[in-house]
Length: 382
Image (cartoon, rainbow, N blue to C red):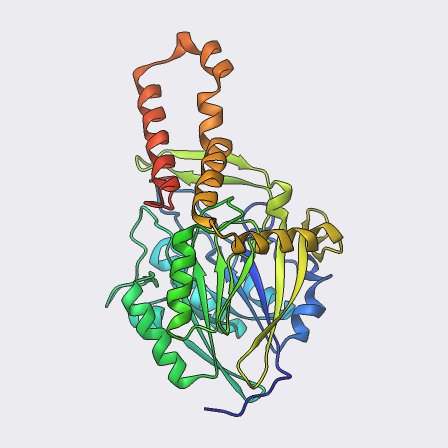
């Protein structure tokens, strides 16, 4: 164990993706306004949501993301020193895409966790010495993907959240490091509040030694909770994303294109500066960020963002959080998926066009949303 230094700082940012107009245009200007803040930290950590590949073949059956390998050096220049690859897009271009990503990151001097050429590398922690403090970072994903993505004994892939394995990994890191970070891809897209199951998992992982649990995947900012001396940042939101045209292939091989437009909530992220005192107390400074479509990532000075963070975090203190969340989830599923399908006006205007496959799709959608609300699934696409 090394001597603690209370002056150290880590910067934590959210999802990084280059799909769309930025995929093959790696420009440092997109980080220009915020790069000084990133570089000021002793170590800046993010979630790389795009494999870095030149060309390649995307896996069929899902929406896929990518960026040129040249983005790696831009990330490093902006101040990012470590990324997690444990997410539902790292394997979008298969094992070759992962190899290309690992090579690009390594050549740029960026460390990575959460994926590898086999399960040993994928599950291994990154041990980083920061001003005399040894920091251990682990990456895991709990997000289901209908494709072969999990690392095996001899196969490339991502580090899946196996509870027993992750608990053991945290305990080992606790013995080697002064500060243990778990970078966790989890939760539900477009949800502002974590599920009760996520909160139970957070308590369990904090209990075995995770000092900081950092969440990604919802693409919106969620609240922050303290569990003893540990901190859980449920979701940092998007750090760099853009409007883009999804280009992917169905399982039958047919190409599909669809446009994705970021809502204002999806343009908002959170940069967390983390320090730790010698008594293991984690201290946080929160810096709201916003993706400007013309000028890239910027600090967001809007006072409403601070009030919003207080509200998101304050909701976690509700005495009856579980039934409250179920009510919220029903409303959210209606807004995201069911409302458009079950709208009375929509049904009446299209009644004459309804076919059996439409009814089957409706039943499937209801089934998925019911499983999400009852916490039996986090995947609206299964």
